[in-house]
Length: 320
Image 1 (spheres, rainbow, N blue to C red):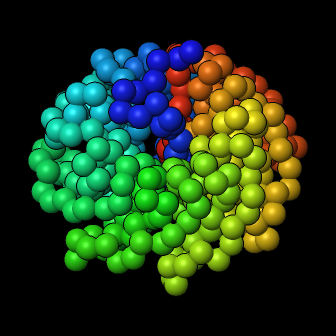
Image 2 (cartoon, rainbow, N blue to C red):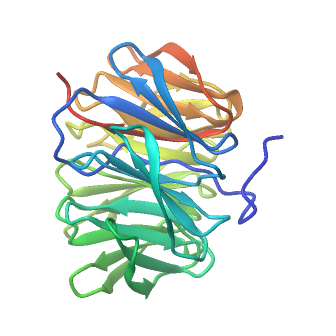
């Protein structure tokens, strides 16, 4: 059995393929391996690992600031955020913010939004200095976060409260708590920012929130333990990683009906897609691998060996 984070044995890491916008370079796929404490880089053209960065700890989640070529990784056991210079491929700083930093997201204003799993709070951290500038209370066990491009809203999956908190960052207040299924964990915001997909782990459902009305407009059954979710850039398909099913289900983003299932490795969690929608990448936690999916043929075309415990995937950059 793989070693799990002390903060909660049932927690898994899975994040949609979203990051800060701004860079214009070839796409890279970043994979966070919790057990070995390593961030790996996969070249999206060759589907080969080109770099590995050691984090000196058991990471939980990360976000990418593509414009400034940085990654920010949460380390719950030490209460830190590791800052990675993606150009030099080194850990350039460690922000000591305390608590149990877990989910993390960034915006174009050099702000980090960090969920504290144990304190049930979201902190706003200066991405340059690591100073916590403000915080506010949310529901119990905030897991994954998603932000709009301009950072005016942050969505928080409150796992033990069974809702998604919607934060107005200018007023620093919770606009609404949207009830979803049991144990929401992963979030994916559509490219047009009008749809938020929510993977509800214990309910085995996929909730769709209309971000204009802030209401659930669809709820679809999934397979066992959906821990990861992503939406293709053209808003046509939603991908859900079924941890206990060892598969990824593909849903039509309009009808929200399952269109097919692709078998992958053991305990898949994080999932991300390329900007052109040609491929998806899936972190197989118990297989120490990343599955590469061809989204046209709906098949696994490659399995990449990676450091132990891969649980989260993000895609950054733009196609050549």
